[in-house]
Amino acid sequence: MIDRSHDLPVARQAAALGISRGSVYYLPRPVSESDLVIMRRIDELHLNFPFAGSRMLRDLLAAEGIVVGRLHVATLMKRMGIEALYRRPSTSKPAPGHKIYPYLLRKLAVTRPDQVWAMDITYIPMARGFVYLTAVVDWFSRRVLAWRLSITMEVAFCVEALEEALSRYGTPEIFNTDQGSQFTSAEFTGALLAKGIAISMDGKGAWRDNVFVERLWRTIKYEEVYLHAYDTVSEARGSLGRYIDFYNSRRPHSSLDRQPPDRAYFNRPSLLAAA
Image 1 (spheres, rainbow, N blue to C red):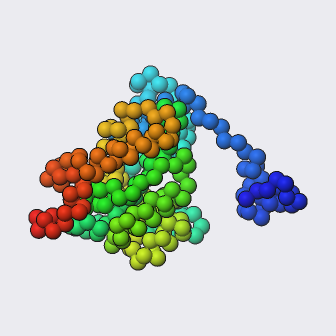
Image 2: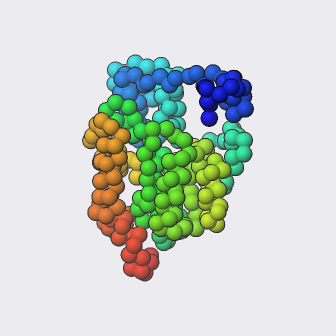
Image 3: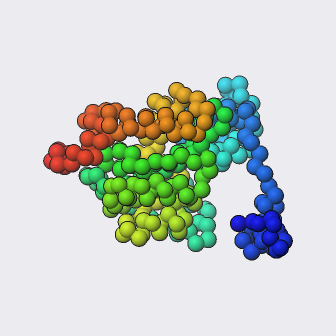
């Protein structure tokens, strides 16, 4: 990237890379302790009221004695990677070179493991800061096939989780995500297309299109994340790893006749007969 010792001026290097010169000198500002408290509460409110936008969240926070402006709430929501979830016309265009794929799961009967996989990203609060969690989930069994933590929302950690799932469990027929830039990137979609996997993407802001992953996030946060205050990323990774192992192998799931996801995923003959 930028080499400050190179004979070529920094401005010329930035122009060659297609980035602004100002971004070269920008140092990210740490998130304040007060904002971290607000972000955690926004995350909790968002799980309970996914339809709430910045205005409603501002009012809900105010009712709890937390005074913050709507624009600041919107800024924090953007940083957390969340938005109000409801069906609305799409008025935005994908980034240049990013193709949006149609939603393929409407009225589709998902009857077996590896028929449909899904993936999403969620915000994870820590004692002093936050990270992002992404996971690949088998739609039929609800099993978490692979996951990663990252301090940024760049595409790399999503691709790593995808590649792990593909290498360990083969290929699904359909892979569903939202329209986030990580999932519409050529790097991510190319990995799916190279395997002959059909790509499905949620409607813009339509939470029901990926409801099973949304339910997973709710479960992980209430049963694991909100009960702990991770001091470090490594601590968060270890604790989340233990919980996900428990979720896959031991936690009964109501939609699976009280079986854990592992049994639903690996014990296929009996499940297919029951279906």
